[in-house]
Image (tube, rainbow, N blue to C red; front, side):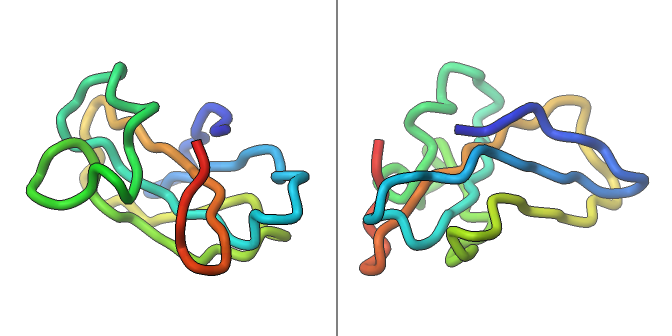
Length: 94
């Protein structure tokens, strides 16, 4: 779902296409912490915690706002993020 991130000064801006299904009411943004690009598809609530693949970055972004901006003071060379659509109960789609 994510488009390539855009650096903005000392920050990062992610944008993606708005979900068109009625079940998606919010988005959650997850940061892949194992540094592996192949972990992007599984970065989400189901694999969060215990430092496995994803660290929660932001949740409950309104469906009408498909973007996320974050200040990054010392960004690493390479970071992967995953934006996932979520239902009202917080469950995420694939």
